[in-house]
Image 1 (cartoon, helix red, strand yellow):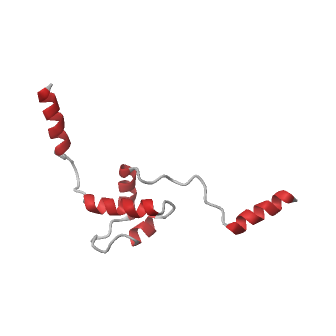
Image 2 (image 1 turned 60 degrees about the vertical axis):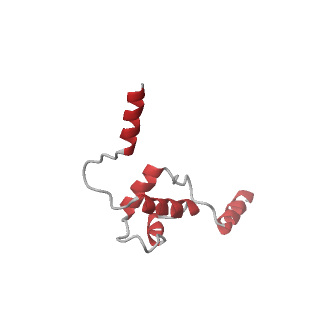
Image 3 (image 1 turned 90 degrees about the vertical axis):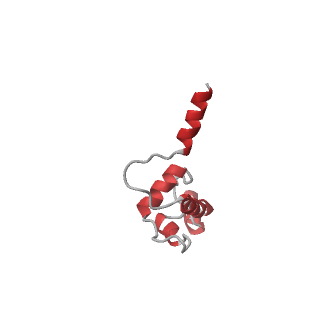
Length: 96
């Protein structure tokens, strides 16, 4: 049992990735997550623009999408929120 526990801890510590190395580190991933959770309706392009200037090169939109998917920090909108004008138009239509 002790050997199995030690093995599991060692596996968690060692990150064995095959393929191309990541172009963002943990600090940059946290910055992406912070920007995405501050305003959940933001687009990937606006998240890309609001990242701190210390991240160079700026990650692509596809990279940001993958990081948010892994971090599970963003839920897609089910529908767009109504503006006050649209809400009023819908009320007017219902009253007819």
